[in-house]
Image (cartoon, rainbow, N blue to C red; front, side):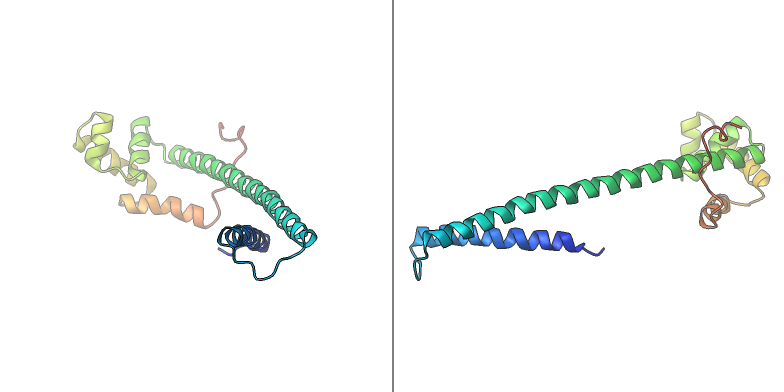
Length: 171
């Protein structure tokens, strides 16, 4: 990821100001001043460095707010995508005319649970889960869990997975 130039300016500005203050304090403590400077020049340097630090705080706040806005936008986009994916799953399940039990098994299967794990979660036998999985594969016209998952991945990749308005998802 490329670092934005305002952030680079912010880092440089704060670094210069910090170096000024730290070197000034060290020079005073150690007593290593090559030549005394006038108090006006010293005050101007300190005011400039202080303004630089204040600008750094302001620019830091702006960078923080922008970052938060990007994060909120990404989270909102993710929520829309999750809703669209859920709606798409339900649409496919209706299209395949899956029973409620088959829907549950299909969902667990797509989430990556093993047959034994699904049986444990549903409190059924692994044989029942296998039979329901085979019914799902038959209805979806696939032969394995990988092919079932690939149907949904293909839908996402070809752009057919789009967010539907909330009122249409109930149809």
